Image 1 (cartoon, rainbow, N blue to C red):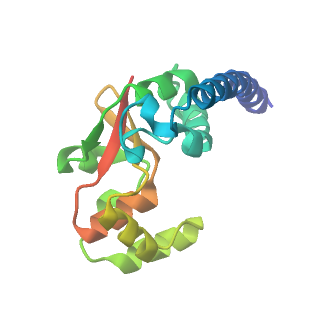
Image 2: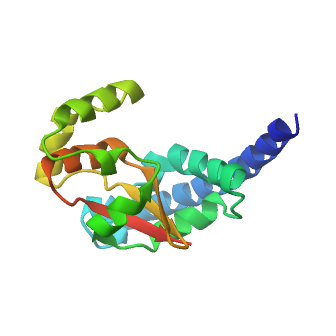
Image 3: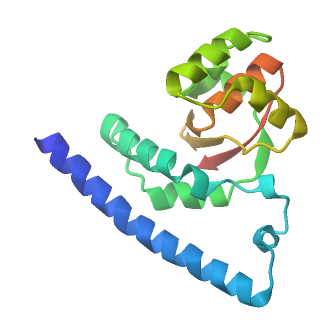
Length: 178
């Protein structure tokens, strides 16, 4: 019962923060529309050069709740979002990839698309063959990783990372640091 109450309280706090975040996003969107600013010119970068916070917000929420409960970490959704927004696109090195938690991607060997397909099917995710084409084009949503202490924890993008591993490439990612 105590765990359910704690989870519910964390969820309510995160919902309150999410409403504030959405209100801010709506206001920024309204101002950009009035000023005639295109969606991504706010950051003066290509579309994939910024973390997809809106598209991955559920994964961010789940990860924060999981790390609070299982690891007793004192972090918030706001902390994670801020760290990701301040991060730069970077290549995921083998050194970090080998330490990455919350992923099967660091166990996928080059050309092992069968394992990637099996795991993607298990989670109901995008077909790796379709992802392969998107990754080759460079037009994929960058996986999101959180670095705290000496640990790296995947927030979102497991299937993208598994596909990249099977392709034998080091993908571009965003690493937020707390």
